[in-house]
Amino acid sequence: MLLITCPWCGPRDETEYHYGGQAHVPHPENPGELTDEQWAAYVFYRDNPKGPFAERWMHSIGCRRWFNVLRDTATHEVLTSYRLDEPRPGGNR
Amino acid sequence: MTAQPLPEHPDFLWRTPEPRSSYDVVIVGAGGHGLATAYYLAKNHGITNIAVLEKGWLAGGNMARNTTIIRSNYLWDESAAIYEHALKLWERLPEELDYDFLFSQRGVLNLAHTLQDVREGVRRANANRLNGVDAQWLEPDEVAKVCPILNVSPRTRYPVLGATFQPRAGIAKHDHVAWALARRADELGVDLIQGCEVTGFLKDGDRVVGVETNRGRIHAGRVGLAAAGHSSVLAERAGVRLPVQSHPLQALVSELHEPVHPTVVMSNHVHVYVSQAHKGELVMGAGVDSYNGYGQRGSFHVIERQMAAAVELFPVFARAHVLRTWGGIVDVTPDASPIIGRTPVENLYVNCGWGTGGFKATPAVGWTFAHTLATGEPHPLNAPFALERFTTGALIDEHGAAAVAH
Image (cartoon, each protein chain N blue to C red):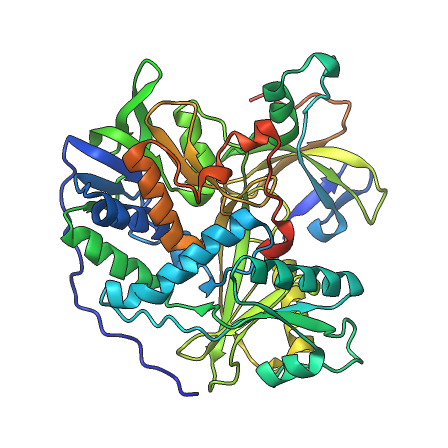
């Protein structure tokens, strides 16, 4: 089981949280101008790295707030967690 | 019902050749899908200058980690067609491969615990029958006749309100399936090369012309990827992005018991599925862990919940001990259906996205992916499962019949 630190509530067991997939996926700025390929990329395609991955979690049975976690998908190590308005630690990759 | 002894197998079922510098077709991944593809390429299409490359050991990935269930009771026409083709092939494979891998058509029950489950189950059984798939709807008393150890009391937290039943579904001994396919492929001239990891792709412009491996460069007319959980990592090295997410999927077995469980029981709602292996272990699984991961292990609470569900459904299991748990890495698509076909890169083909259900499809994957690799065109059975469906919107949303939450 993962031990995840909520930025507001502190470290709690994984079972307190809901997983939300990849973080930092912005909604298209001009949706009306997107091609079918661009829509497919936005709706269906996400990164799937073997290594550090920035992802969203919600503290669903705690403060119910969303935040981001940087976690290594190969080792399951939770590297850090941070608020949605903060940039990904260490840059994009 | 009696416990069956495992089939004997000789020490050496296939050669251990050095990789050659060039092949007509290179298949990446010597799991069930890769082996079946090589077998049908040789048998159906006469293409035998093939290498199957495996970074670990033959069939040591998800093929060694799955829960061996075979069925074809999927909802949508496209899915029913390909899984039913697989089931028909399974029915003749032991004889064709001359290998008794203990294919046992003991049937599968998919339980319903809510009114919505009941409606979905009845609908799916009707859809199955329209597609020539054997399926029926059973009321709780009929469910109890098929599986007497199942608790169909109305006083459980989520009572069994009925079930779909596919009598031709069953289980097979997964390792032996792989070895049976490997032996035949080897006899037909296919090079099965273990300990050979693909680290990159050789390209000529937009075409793939081979692979880079830890054992040198291997040129290939066509390359087929069959790497399950690692498909997106591999495809990225060829510059192809796949709409899959990799998740850990856990399974477990109990100690050995006398034969008590006559069929396969699956439940989406309380989320457990159980069968009994030929040797006597109870084999159980549940859904994927929610997060992405490649660690081949998952979280304990997933196991805890499935065991609670299993004990409520099968009070007779209450004192069974867990012998072993393990995890595989499954590649999940947004519509819970696989991707089989061309990629944007010429001569590079992909078979992936089977999520939690790849084992049952093994022969049909081999049949259709071999066709695609041999002709460059999809077989009618895999045409709907092209990568383009995520752009066109022609999805095959099979979350319900995939049976395992993902």
